[in-house]
Amino acid sequence: MTGRVLVVDDIIANVKLLDARLTAEYFDVTTATSGTDAIDLCERAQCDIVLLDVMMPGMDGFETCRRLKANPATSHIPVVMVTALDQPADRVRGLEAGADDFLTKPVNDIALLARVRSLIRLKMVTDELRKRESASREFAVQGASVDFSPDSGQNANILIVDDRLSSHERLNAVLRDHNRVDVETRPQEALFRAAEGNYDLVVISLALEDYDGLRLCSQIRSLDRTRQLPMLILAEPEDDARVLRGLDIGINDYLMRPIDRNELSARVRTQVRRKRYADRLRNNVQFSLEMAMTDPLTGLHNRRYFEAHAAAAVEQSIRRDRPMSMLVLDIDLFKSINDNWGHDAGDDVLREFAHRVRKNLRGIDLPCRVGGEEFVIIMPETEMTIATVVAERVRRKIERDPFLIHGGTRSIAVTVSIGASCLSTPADTVQSILKRADQALYRAKRDGRNRVAADAA
Image (cartoon, rainbow, N blue to C red; front, side, top):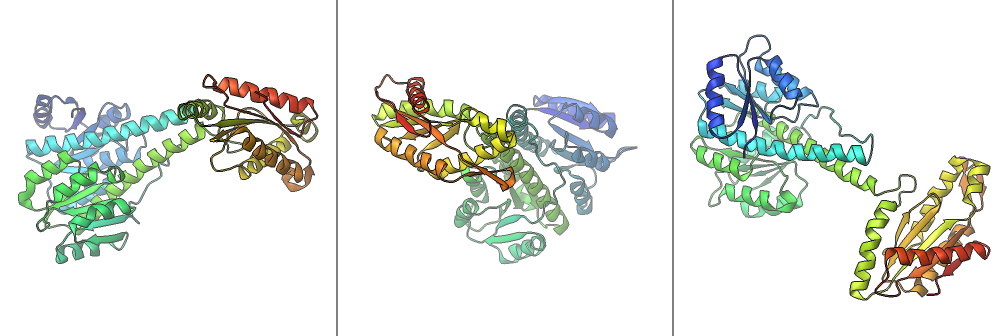
């Protein structure tokens, strides 16, 4: 795992030392000697991670980190404080500013490389989500965006996996004031609880009796339902090698005992904020994909979805030698509704029409809006006789009750003409079935509208 590392330090010797270490491991290194230069490079997307010295003249590392994390364009970039300060209060101050981790001078080469690789790996996942989210907004749902408002990192669901009573009681006492905390003392059950619960973070002790905590971390990371779940491990001072192994496995953060309560709270908030940000990105991508396939006025699937889904439905029916039918629906004299009552009234009719159609279909039927007042219903596993029965039921429901328009102050009568066709030969395609349904719809219109006509093929 390689990437672009920005080293920020006002002492040139320190910059050259880190540059040499990282370059030897094939990282692409960029350097800066001030917080202002670092912010500029980050805003121009010149790095994947920042190694930031704390003690700098002018803008120190804490303020630089705070500004990076406050800017939506740079808030996702991991920041590691590199400092001679080694007191818990200093780490808490950095975490409150938004730092993702600390490396204490003199920097251990193994710890440096493990932490850099781990955070770059997380950054690349976030970058991919950001690209998908951006593309979804640009091509599917203009205006949909991720909420960048500050997140407290509190009110989280946290699972603690620790079989030592004194240990998990102290952890619980620190976290429960601002979070919902569950404790699992049986590591064999922890994976099931993590998968079944809606957790924002799992805190795992490496001092589990007769159980390898890293094995649990590996299982959590490999299971689909928990793959994105953040993990924070608790280690003893002599566990350096296991911590580094954990970073390779995919843990998100770690704490060495004895645990400072303020640092624990700060690291938990950092991980929760990061997870919520990634969740918002994923949810926005999913929302945009759904909107790209949905007609915004009626809530039905749109033409794009119909064209993709119908071909697969026809192919599957032919392969399995199963029936399939299609209905084409057209609202009678819809242009006159727009002309006489206005386009807002036409929209009212379309919305109510879609609601009635959806309400009177079966669960397997798929209604789509493919044009202004034209709709198509795909009916898998359906013979023509059943399709016409369903079509007639829909027609009656449309005709029976007037449609309310203009906020319910007026009502108008609406009818629909429907053409039905079915899969008839293995050589059929979506286009051939749809053409026969269109021809049947034309006959229904020609014969007086407000009726169902079936293809004679």
